[in-house]
Length: 424
Image (cartoon, rainbow, N blue to C red; front, side, top):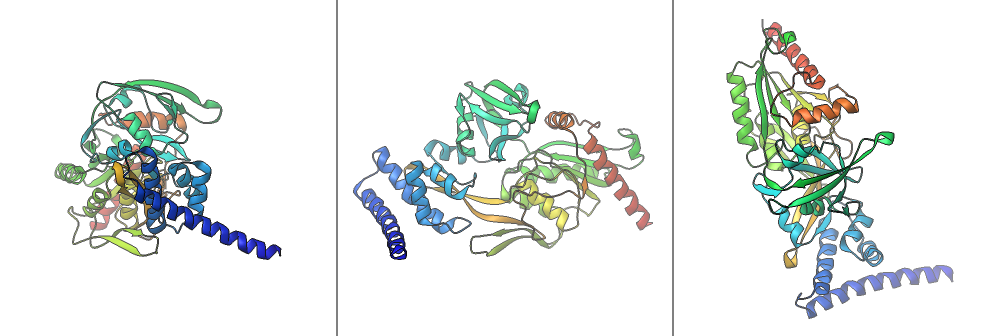
């Protein structure tokens, strides 16, 4: 009798779930979306349909409906069922913010943020912006925006609150440090027009700069983001340092939070010959491969890529491709580990949905989400030194006392010298 009841109970739940979806659809067909409740129901049905058919993993409709019933919100439903900070509903204001092309200007603070250990975290402040001038640092955990706790906010919701009209003020509360060393800091910052940079430093270094380089000349390029101008800027910067006599190249991707997928593929293609750059795997385990075609733009020279725990997403695509293809040696610390593909899908009423639709694999087939990419040569630093490096990376001057930079240059020098001996 108990088994009979359990079977009937399961059938009842299934029928209730189907009836709820059917009922919502009927309600929506009866409404024109003029009121908030109608819009909310319409968005719920749209989101459930998209998650069921396009999310990177199969998801139960009944689980979604039960979670919505429990939490009373679309984002609450998504958080409970998916536990994926990158998949969330976007109200019209937040969706509009996502449509600002990467690489254009906007009114804001000038910081890159991401989710780290389920906390909204500063990946890097943009050099010369209000955020950098106010003292925000990579690794700061944002706990409040204008008095609103960020604990239940999506990344896009937080970004939407931080952006706004130029000249207006926003109050940011952060936690800095760990354990007994945690500081709670408050910053009152005036929004300015922000232009997202790409290449932020370039130089040719030799023994006059660092005696241990001797007669070796090394090129240095710091890349701070991947946007619509990145490929042209990197091409010009690398060409300039090579024409300046550089015998090897150091590409600094530390504190680079990523950006456009297309830009990362184009940058990797500058240094790679025929072969894979990155793979994208969807929910059906089908794999699409982005490939380098023909010879690389630049002649093959010894190359080091400098990475750290704030090198994320597009930075990991480039560093992973160059490492897997044997083109560059990675130096620094393990990268951020952002290996998911998001698609921003428009919904009715001007809203949208940021939906995880795939996973990245590096050129060599490694999944790196939440694990990151390990460098070939680890150069860990303590928290105090890391904070100093974070500051140095935002400045226009190249700080040669940076211990990770020095180690990377030593390795690159040895690669150049070894190559010269072999050629001789």
